[in-house]
Structures are given as structure tokens and as C-alpha cells.
Amino acid sequence: MFIGYARPVGREYEAKAFIEEIKKLHWDANHNVSAYYIKEKSYFAIKYDDDGEPAGSSGKPIFKILESKEILNAVVVVTRYFGGIKLGFGGLSRAYRDTALSVIEEAEIIEVFEQVRLRVRLKYSESQKARSLIEKYGIIQEEIYSDTVEFILLVRKDLEDEFVKKVRDQTKNKVELEKL
Image (cartoon, rainbow, N blue to C red):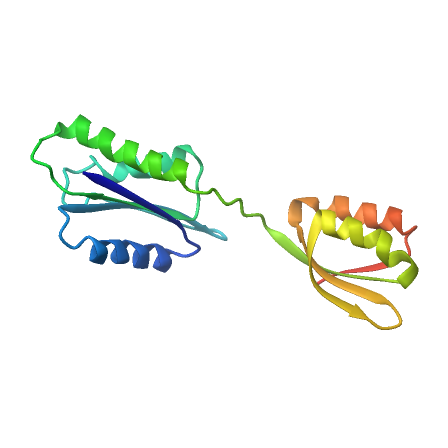
């Protein structure tokens, strides 16, 4: 019997902690095979572990699924309880790969984007025009009302230039923008 688990992680220590959590949960299993693929700024952490299975038969096929589907910042653990039937190297490899594929396909994929934090300051008369644009392009974190309206927001980095151009156009350049 094969049981698969997957979890998003941001750092290598989180992946290792999740693997240990599954090993404790299935302490009586024959194998808890794992793989993770993590990108943290310019740092990559890639690891797969066969956990006593024949070398290359289990951890690597799990990692290859993560790699081929371009899934970063994730860890997958496949637990195996031996059922008495020897699968051979190929069968074992397929079983681990198929279980990993299954758990990944059932999991919700979360897209992560690099974001920039901006301050948008404008007059009250321009604030409603800008608000709908801000909500379309970003997430408002803070609103400050004084003699002007100020929004602190997060915008996807790849949409920053487009957002700045549109908010300037929409307010006829009656806006102060600042990257925080």
C-alpha cells in the first residue's frame, strides 16, 4: 500500500520538518520516501531520499514529477507498507511516481508571484477611480485618510509598470507613487 502526502514549503527546514512529521505518523511503515524542490531567492534546495528502497527507485521518480511539472517550494512524501508482493525496480519506480503524481494532482496548486509594495497618494476626488484599478492589480494592505487618501498595496512585480502607467493615466497624473 502506498500513501502520498504533499505540502507547500518556503524553506528547507520546513520540508525536513514535514518529512519527520510523516515518519512519526507512519512509524510502522516500511518506507517513507521523500523529495523536495525549493527555491529561496538565488538558493536552490533539491533533495530526494529512497529511505531504504533500492537506490534511484523511489525518491528520484518523485523528484522528477516535481521537476517536470515545474513545482517549486513543495515537498512530497510517499509512505509504503509492504504488502508481500515484490514489484521489482521498474514496478517500484512506477508505484512511487504514480502515487506522487496522484497526490500532486489532487492538491491545490498555489501560484506565487514576486510582489512590490507601493504607496499611492492622491486627492479624494481621484480616490474612487484609482481604487477600482488598485483592486484589479493589487491587494490593499492599508488605507490612510487625511487631507489626501493614501493606499499601501502589494502589486505583482511583473505588472508594476502597467499598473503605474494606468493609475497615472486614470488620474491624469494627479497621483504620488512611491516604492516601499
